[in-house]
Image (cartoon, rainbow, N blue to C red; front, side):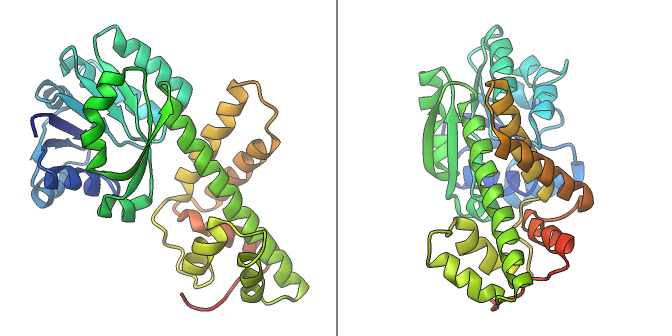
Amino acid sequence: MSEKIGFIGLGNMGRPMSRRLVEAGFAVQGYDLDRARLADVAASNRLSAATGLKELARTSDIVITMLPNGHIVREVVLAPDGVAAGLKSGGVIVDMSSAGATGTAQLGAELKKRGIVLIDAPVSGGVAGAEAGTLSIMIGGDDEAAIARVQPILAAMGKNLFRCGKLGAGHATKSINNYLGAIACAATAEGLVMGTRFGIDPQTLLDVINASTGVTGASQRLFPGQVMNRKFGAGFALALMAKDVGLAAELGRSLGMDAPYASLSEKLWAQARDAMPNADFTEMAKWIERQNGVELKGRPS
């Protein structure tokens, strides 16, 4: 593949995503602040390790960021020795992190003045989807030629590519999707705890929900696979889910919406995050259990 890719952020998601690119035949150079992690990923994924952001950008055609939030993305891109300082005019930055839509649009406008195109392309599917190359990728951007240019790169990492709209639309879509998933997770836990306190077997109640109108992705997959068997290991941090719910709530506020469910969810997920800072997001159910003195148990998955 002719495009040279710089990949910034080699954590739980970035590691398998960068490996998929190498396996697809792309020349990939990686960077991570954790030097030990960078060396490990470079060796295991067969990619070259950059010594700095500017160096990585100078020798790349397309730079991918997979970082914790939009503030860090902005710092990495606009720092004096950051990506924008090294990427030549005509280069493309693809932000695959979870970030705010408004901030993404602002960053894109600043980069456009330098001749650099920004595309937002956050993902859904977790570590398992990254490993398998089956991620859903939500694409936002204003430059159709640049989007067509990165399409083969995104296709190496994802199975379902969705063109969502203008720059920032990918991030908006991701935050809305995760907000809805967060509501389903918390509401299902609350409902099961409610039934248990009344005396209904929680597994029986879950079976009824999954055969009835209360069914959701959370009740079908999350609770049988992670909660009822007490595994609590979906691989996505509760703090990250709280962040995404907050991004959705902030989006609603920026649009002048009356969005009480988003505001309440933002508050509840922040409370759970503060109570369990290192928890998996499925442990929101555990937090609701503790609030009500109930433990949900069911059949092993």
